[in-house]
Length: 383
Ligand SMILES: Cc1cc2nc3c(=O)[nH]c(=O)nc-3n(C[C@H](O)[C@H](O)[C@H](O)COP(=O)(O)OP(=O)(O)OC[C@H]3O[C@@H](n4cnc5c(N)ncnc54)[C@H](O)[C@@H]3O)c2cc1C
Image (tube, rainbow, N blue to C red; front, side, top):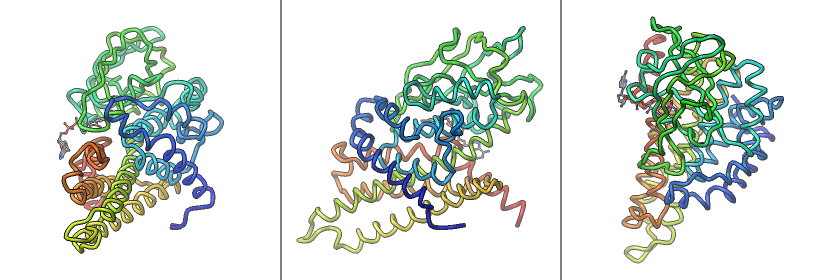
């Protein structure tokens, strides 16, 4: 593994950094305060390539490698957790399964549309009111064939981007007998009659990233809207989540980096006992720990992305990277608040928002407990 970024990756990093610094970071507080999605970031981010990272160029995407995707997600996380999550859900969940498993017709029809920034985004609905970690056993949303259509009935929960999406790729049970080959993915356009998107959930953080319950009441879509072969939905979902975990880990690194930068600035200018608090060893150690853990997490994220690009199994590395980066981000944001003292607890400063945003990262796309389960399975199988 090469620890240097390629020239292309370095240019990409700078391009995305400059874009986020100009278009996304300055609006982060506003989107959180107003629970408002940053549409401008979509309109302007499309031409930069930020909406087509999982989409090959022939379908209008930027088709970047996995390290470049991780770089972009870190930069987005550095700028704004909400906007970063919406972009991660679009690239990693809403478009990746379609690009990886969809038919030629589906890819041609939908991918160019959601990559250009002029339209809405993509979304993926796996989780249900009664099932998140256990999608294999718990999914009860079902689809049955009738003539040349699927009829979908059920309910999904916590669907990021649902209200700002052109379509929702929906995990459904197509074989009522159950088992690992009983689930399938179906693309459901959001204007299909019978599909209802609930109001945006009121969340602790990530308030500029809309999350919704979705219900399906005799929703009819053509048989051709099946994404991948019938019965492969579980395997497709797990593969999608493996890659998505790298993205969530990368966002966490970005949040932590941003918190560190805010803490350094504050520690330099805040005085106590006649000197800047940055002169106190207790503060320096916090900053040193943050910097060290960020570096470790970033390296692990890039390692998992690199293995993915080698087309080797990366399930364990993605789980380790996500587990470490997300829990690290929470520690970093906690310490950044601590360094800010009372001001850290105020909405006037950004670190409290970062702390609230980071909290989701240990839950979405597989909780920390599920990551430990995955890692332990590998450890027990090999050692
Ligand atoms: C803001 C937000 C955005 C989201 N976006 C999406 C999205 O776009 N699409 C989507 O499909 N989902 C989305 N989710 C759902 C998310 O992926 C789930 O919340 C997550 O997978 C956990 O599922 P759950 O909430 O049902 O918790 P549960 O699975 O009910 O888990 C509850 C607790 O039990 C623990 N647990 C469960 N099983 C085990 C086990 N075997 N061993 C040890 N502990 C266990 C969990 O770790 C957790 O602590 C989102 C959630 C949030 C909050």
